[in-house]
Image (tube, rainbow, N blue to C red; front, side, top):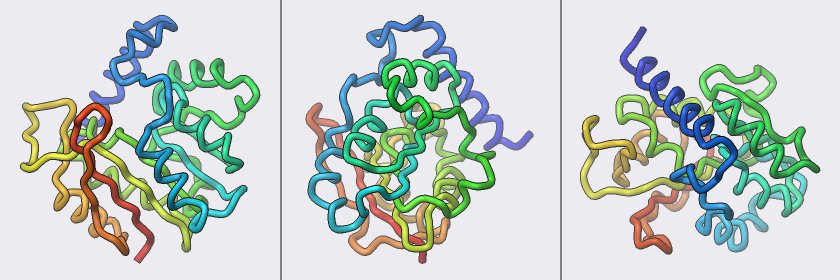
Amino acid sequence: MSTTTESLATTADYFESVYAEAEGDQTRIPWAARHPSTALVNWLNAVAPSLVRCGARVAVVGCGLGDDAREVIRRGYEVTAFDLSPTAVEWARGLDPSHTESYTQADLFKPPGRWGHRFDLVVEINNLQYVPPAAQTDTVKALSKFVAPHGHLLIVCRGADEPASRDEGPPWPLTERQLAEAADEAGLVSDHGVSCFTDEADVKRLRGLFRRA
């Protein structure tokens, strides 16, 4: 087993254990905001209307309890929200009983074949920072495989001024250069580059909108 595979397996086990041990109590999930990402909402308001048509196919990666997925569904998009944790997926379905078919358990690195280049928009919010540094570029490469020929990948993650070491996380925030280079290695380009902003909790975040080169 490669170091990257071992790192990802450990990360997957960690997330599933947190969801399972929470026993239905959202307050026991450290990252459960119980509302959609403000960065995503702002982007959906300002950029999405001119870029992604209503009814377009959208993948929400690492959906967790479905806060972001429910927001995207509410706006009229055809959503496929997935997570590696079966407990998280069942929980998300329970929170959105009218759209249970939109949530599925899947592995980013072993997705259903029909998902290849299928989505007009792929949404990746605050998951990449929980992937060990050695596996972050491979993760962006996996994300890129979902993007349709004229589609886009939106990434929002925790930002840093210097690269994080393996011993510092999780999370492992990325520098602007790291995110840009990972996208480049995945065959993606950005018309506006990677931007940096501070969120409502005064945490540095990065945002990048990418398309196939």
